[in-house]
Structures are given as structure tokens and as C-alpha cells.
Image 1 (cartoon, rainbow, N blue to C red):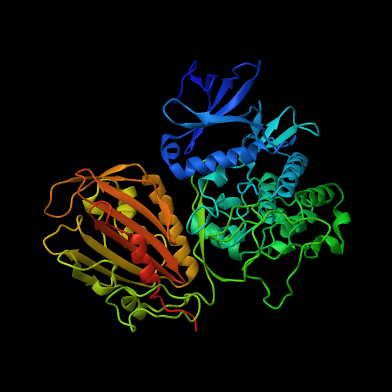
Image 2: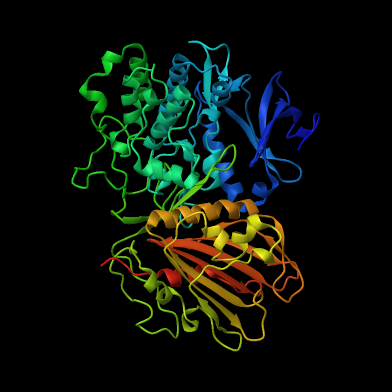
Length: 584
């Protein structure tokens, strides 16, 4: 935490304005001009990550290019003497929409005014192929007296996307706050500016009712499923005095199918204003008709027989994010062939700027299997793939998915790992670690970790090299099946949340019959379709890599401990994934 009078990039710190998981925001005096700016100083953990530094630099530049009266201006960026990244932004002397709502000053007219101003910012950004990704009341900054002249600015462009950007990670990830996230974002599908429209509809509902569209009382998994499956809520169910026409506005804004939403933020705002002041004016076909828009590749249509819609030739569509392994948003990628996709995403709320990550792995129908590992038989690893991973893999098939010794890459010689334990129940190593929050980050197939979701079955094995400790040379592999693939995705994302919270932390592990050991977690990464977290021994003699991924309704959960520089849990997950049954 910086104190008053500290200097950062020529700025003099006056006081702290707020703090969160990503860092702190300070009021700072400009180096040469007679004004104050807002200086956001990112945490040391994020600032040390080389991938994030690269993304942050690019996204800060993108944010700085958005010159609009309703967008918080970005003035400068840099790093402190000890390497912490910072960004200087326009200081808005006032409050935000979430704080105003909590203070009891949010009227329907004020809510519609705020949404109208934010819509202008979104339309401007979308016209420049930029998607905000984190539309929520806390990002709407308010200045001046409440009323028609109240100034509204949209903040935090770019920083959320810098945390985990499609095209820069192996699996592709996006950022969103679960309470306001669109179905296609939560399910990990490619998305475009219409996801912001959905979030703006959720925000309007919140500002009108004081509640989020779907209650979070049953946890993030239930909220995610509600966004995916439940119909849009009615504002009149919460506030009966509101015009029923607002129910129809919310229904269109929060349509599950992107093509059925408003074509722009301004169209949403205009419909909301009309509903508030002249409800009868909404009784027309145009509002309820599907809005023309580009088909989101691989997004499951509500009616598979419905024809695809296309964007009018008179103007460009909102920015469409690229699928995994593609270029970044706005890069002008050529159209890709249609893919069948498997959702493995759902989100869990975290702090301030960012609340969750979501992942999708796309599976082309003609995708070949990975090359067989030396020593494996043709009966063990398929050479062709009939289709995407099955979404109904039965419990009885789980054991056959695990790797035998000959299928583990590089598992030869006197240090080869061999089967030591084989079971069909989750493990519980909570007594061996001092930080229970990091139990799942450290060990696979843990009962307390999977208790948050309903599982169908599990197969788990421990393999260890002869005369070596389990933390020195071993593989613990598990495959867990769920009643449906949504459950696998929810479990993966809940675990990702906990792993990210443990990044950079040191834990004490005490295996049975051994003295305590110190292990330090690195930063989680996406590695060949798997989410991976590495832990290094304080003795410097071993590194344990823990990775998770999903295929259909199966979650793959593997940890490999090896001497430094010799492990590759991503290869194990890939080999295991190739054994998951496929649709025929």
C-alpha cells in the first residue's frame, strides 16, 4: 500500500480510493498539470507474470484509444521502481451506480438515464471492435447531481481482458462477473458485443429492482445454470408498480440467443425509456422480433431448425471474439470452419475488477487423435476420432480412461512409475496440509473439493517410482464423471477460483511418516488445453504440476511430481483426453 506523498511515475499519491484483488486505486496529483488523476497500481503477483504484463500493455493501449465522453479516459501507464504495473486514468469525483443503489437514491428514471449513457459508450466501443466484458453497476461512474444532467462514464475497459485473453492462452478464456454474464460467455462459446447487451439488460434489472436477475444465494454454480436455462425475470415480480412493458425490454435484452437481443445498446436504452414513459408505445412487432446479427460460431441455437441470421450489409457487427487458438479481438481473422464445441465453463465470483474465468475447448468433428505414445497398443489409444467427447460417459468406463504405465510419456527406465494404489472413491488429504483453501490446488481428486458439485463416479490411481517419495517422482491421476457436462464445467471453474487464490502462496505439507515440507505455488497457466498450477519444493529437488481439464461430462484431474524441468502434466492430460469415449 502506498502512503500519501509517495511518488509513482511522477505522480504524487494523495490518498487511497479503494482496493481489491487486483491492486489499489489512488488519488494522485498530475506531474505537471493542476489536476488529480486516478492511479491504479496492480498487485505484485500480477505484475510479476510476464504474460499478464504483455497483455496489460496492449490492453491499456486499446483502452487509451477509446476517446468518448462516456468512457473513462486512460492517460498513461508504467511501472513502479519495484516493478508493479500502474495505469493513470481520469478521476471521476463522485460515486458509482452500485453505491448509489445501495444508498437508496436509484429511481427508475435515474436507472434508465444511466443505462442510456452507458449504451452510448458501448456502441462506440463496439464500432471499434472492442467488447467490454465486465458490464456491471460498479463500473458505471457517476458525477454531478442526480437528474438528466448527471454525468455517467463507463470504466475499466481493457484491464479485465488483459487478465485472460482469447488467442493468447492455450484454451482461450474470457472475463465476466457471473451475476451479469451472458449465456454464451458462461458456456465458453465465442461471443461478441451482444454479450455486453445482455449484461446491460442484467444491470438495468438490478438498478430497477435492487436485485440481480438470478439470486446468488445458492452459490455461483446455481447462478450460472440460471443464466443458461431460466427465462429472463420480470421486474414487475419484484416492483409491481413498474410498467409491465419493462418486462418485455428485459426479456429482449436478456434473450438466451444473441441474435434475439437488441441490435445495439442505444436500442435497448430507447426501448427502456419508451417503456418507462409511454408503456403503450412498446406494443409493436419490432421490439419482439429477432434482431439481425452475425451467427456466433458454434453457439447452440434454441431451435436447431431455425435459419441462421446475418448482419445487415449497411454496417459492421459488434466485435466477435475469436475461438481458442485464434487471433485476438479485432485482428480480422478469416472465417473458420464450423466446429462442434464442448462447454467446460462456468464461473465463480471473486473481487472488484474481475469475477471469473471461463474456458472452452473446441473439437472439430474431423479432429485426429494425438500420436500414440511409445509402447501403447492400438487397442489402448485410438488413431481416429469419431466425434467430440461423449457427454454421457458412464461410471463403468472411467477406469479404462486412466493411463497405464506404458501410456505415460517418457515413463521408461529404472525411474518409471508403477501402479501403487487403485480406487473408485475420492481422496481426502486435508490432514496433511496447513492451508485448507489450497488443498485442491495441491492434491487431485479431493473429497472436500468435489463436494460443491454432484458427481456420478470416480476412478483414481497413484503411481510411484521405486524407492522414491510420492512428492519426488509420482503420478496421481483421476477422472471424475458428472451427470451432465455442465457439472464438469462448474467443478472446473470452482477449482480454478481456488487455485488462483493460492498462486504465489507457500504451504506446509506433511506426508504420512515424513517431516513437514514447504511448497510454493507459481502462477496458474493454460497448457495444451489444461489449467495447470505448479508447486516447487523449498528443498529444490522436486516440482509438482497439477492440471485439470474436461471432456464431455468427464473432468480429468492429474498431478505429476518430478525433478525440476522434467515433468509435463499437460502431456498426461492430453493422453488421457484422447481415451475419453467419443460420440459416434
